Length: 342
Image (cartoon, rainbow, N blue to C red; front, side, top):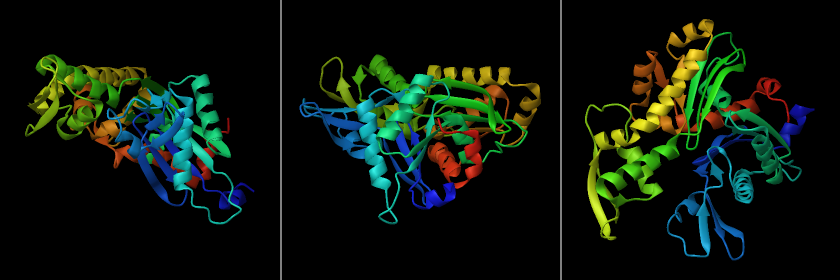
């Protein structure tokens, strides 16, 4: 009966991230990746833009329009905004095969550290946005499934998922999470660290988008073979006028040092709590994998490897690891036995 109903349903996997939302459609793969941002007209209370269009408005809106992020630290901060965002993304990827199409089943990922109240809020928001059935999976498990780790086998694997609002890490074995840690420190905190660094060192004020561009272009966690430079435009805190400076990757590494230390210390904590039988499995190549947008920070694998003395690899296409995991749950029914409907 379940297989029969899936024929009439556009089932969807969603990685509802703080920075980006990714959508997987069963049978088609990853079809959408857009910023988790909405823009609302404060006079009419209507949402006028979602995703990429809303991101273009950040820091540039008139008084009656507010561009905001409905997700904060991996959980819903604005329910109406999140519902509008989900409804928009679901409608954007819907391609009914016939007029009798059913509302979609949705598998949605959440941080492992959220409360039962926050978990219920995610489910209710997805149902309001048009889901027929909602299955919730913890992000580290979804990432592990997405990158192809042997989650159902009796061996340990450590997945580190560095997103926009949270860093999730878990040791997984026999289809379950043995040890997990959720840190509300990730890509957004890196951006804030860059903003604060330039403010203190150069009296230069920059926005979130500029900080993110700096992180992507010249940010690094480990010394580079060839240090990089870029020009940055902002506003002088002294004169209040537009100002341009040149910065290098060494400076940005210094700016990110404290944030990265917190992530590395959390990884150490997880390793200290890991049972010795599973610890030995992590020494194997592929035993420790980094996913999420933070995995794209240059040298992050080298830093964690140096600090833990373990071989660390970056997943292929780390940005879509979590949503690919939700997709596998839709494609392969065997995963559903681990994640009953709530």
